[in-house]
Length: 173
Image (cartoon, rainbow, N blue to C red; front, side, top):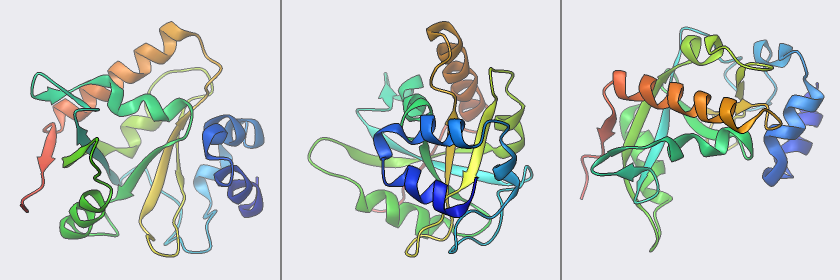
């Protein structure tokens, strides 16, 4: 998979996960810089920040598995904590609020853990930096897996986020 293929996949965001998994079947491109704006491939030692919005990702005042639904379709957008500070992360999250969702903070995820989740074709993390967000990454998993396996992956991701402290709240407003 080349940068062009990943860019082509991003241009069809509704099928991003499927496009990436078909064009990079063995996941090798995770170890390459696939965006011209990227600081480099996402390393296993890195941590990611996944935005948390209310009410979409919160049930009974805690995270729920819907935080990871996008992994199988659009790619779960994250920010690489090694390349942006907490203020930048919260500013981006606040900028994505609308009348239907309120930014609450972010959940922290370890890339090494994500890539180690046992599943068909694996859970992948790609650098998908943009010109205006060079710390952007996407978590992707093969969308064609069975419903039971997708649920298992979402629950593993949720447990991991909760074990890492749940929501790092936004301190503004």
